[in-house]
Length: 110
Length: 118
Image 1 (tube, each protein chain N blue to C red):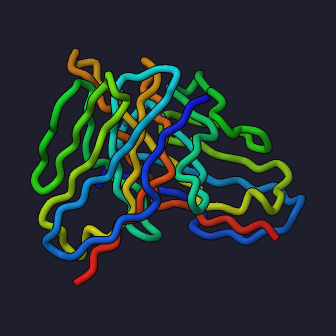
Image 2 (cartoon, rainbow over the protein chains, first blue to last red):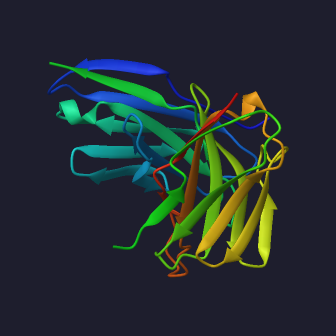
């Protein structure tokens, strides 16, 4: 079957670093995306990795290892506004359809 | 501003009623999607459409139908609502890049419709 596994919740203090892991098993793989969703809000796109390696965008970085079917999102210099749910999503076909993980709730404490 | 809008934002209905959720976009994207979100289950794809003449079932299409009335409009219908269809529903759009670089197929989500079926 197809699955994406990510932790359900992570708690950290302001200024800390958090890594959210995502392992996947899908019928096809074209890339791994990450989305952020604040409580009650719409998901918003953060990053995308189609090739192995690290992509950096400001305080957020995303990593992919296709041979390990694994990726992670790294949140640095955590701020209170980073408290949200984070979803990994696999693009599983050439048409660009996404399959989402169940999400990781990140709680940032003072 | 270019945007994705959903109506209604909240709806409470009774079992057996027919419900339509509407989505409109001004982004000019050709691809549109309907998802439902339940606590602890993430976003699950109901239906998707890559242009007006193309409609595809997602992983949880049973009990739902869709209509792509125009490039900018994509409606989701529940023909006979049941309580386990109580959820948060999101519409999304994307524009698939043909630039030759790997495309993220970044999806832009509407604000969501909170549906409660009693």
